[in-house]
Amino acid sequence: MNTTESRSDLKKLIRLAGPLVVTRSTLAVTGIADAVMVSPLGEEAVTSVTAGAVDLINFAMLPLGIVHMVQSFASQYAGKKDIVTSQRYAVYAIGIALLAQVLALAILPLLKPAVALSDYTLEVQSLLVDYLWIRMFGVATLVITEALGMWYAGQGDARTQMVVQLIMTFANIFLNWILITGHWGIPAFGVQGAAIASVLASALGSVLLVMVFFRKNINRGYLSRRELKSEEFYRLLRFGLPNGLLSFLGYGSWTFFINVAVAHLGTQLAAATLIVLNINNLCFLPAFGLGAAGAIIAGQYIGAGMPERAPQILRMTLSVTILWAVLLGATYFLVPEFYLNLFAIGKDANFSLVDVGSNILKISAAVLLFDSTATVLTAFLRAVGDTHWLFAAQLVINWLVFVPLAIIGVMLIDGGYIAAMGAFLFCMFLSSAAYLVRIRSNRWRSIDLLHH
Image (cartoon, rainbow, N blue to C red):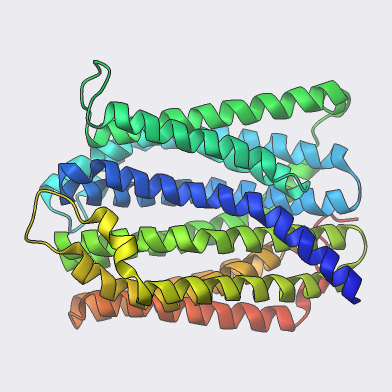
């Protein structure tokens, strides 16, 4: 790849990553906004909302992981200049979202006994059940928003999802203001208000994306002229199901870490750890956007019959992402109060969140670096269709390494937040190393995602 091509690809990476970074960052902003806006209600409310959001995403991770593969198909078909076929994959993803909603409603009676297994206090458990019961009604809209956003991004249009996500974020914050503490004559719903706001905002976003998608495609005649094909749906499941399982198991280990290991730290330390992890998510998600942008460009080159350009795009994406992680991680050491003072409010004046959280935040700087690296490598392997290997690797690393280390360090040795964050850091380092070895083996070159 010559200098001109490198500059062109770098410009394309930044141009595509920008909206994706904004999109993913707004998700973390929403999570932090929820925590901030319920924080006057006390640490129990903060813990229930932050942990509840993690639990909800964990349940939705299987369908979210399946529909995320729409981006891989869309990017490679974009490289082939075949939008007619790629748009059908978005329709299949909407069907998967509706099936996920049926399952979510079916398991509502199991929420209370499942939450009772955690180490949270009874007050936190009660608030957590209330929050999750409401959020489960928004599973379909959550998955539809992700599916159509991935389709547009795979086509090289990241702005549509960005605009919709920004609308959802502002709507969520506005509805939080109305429903959590009560305004405009509406009573205060507390933690339940935060859940209602999230469901309504998600519904708004999904409706907007569905309207835009079907209007454009019906006007172009694609949906009216082309029938859906069972072999394409099967192909989405063939590559999407392993991706969904790896997302589900990966996030499942994360949920176990939050609900068991972090909960074992006690309410105050758990609240501090969860807030730091939310801050890290905000700083990490731009790396997610960069990784997604690099994967889209690599997928488009593969679809266009130029797979030799894909590793070059990966190296470029890694360089930009690592630079971002190092510079941002440095601020964790230099100005931790900047991040933590926002949360240093609540009804327990004796608990100094800044003092405890600053130490956890410094450990998170290293987590940010390796988590960002692993995310970029994962996005590349997903873009080329190497989801079966990714699933096996995640299963081993997360459940045979991460979870046992967290249990031993926090619950048996009583190592506190240092053991908890140390286990997380080692897991991210091991993931990065394993994914890099897999990519350098070049086995991904033999995978034919589109079966042409």
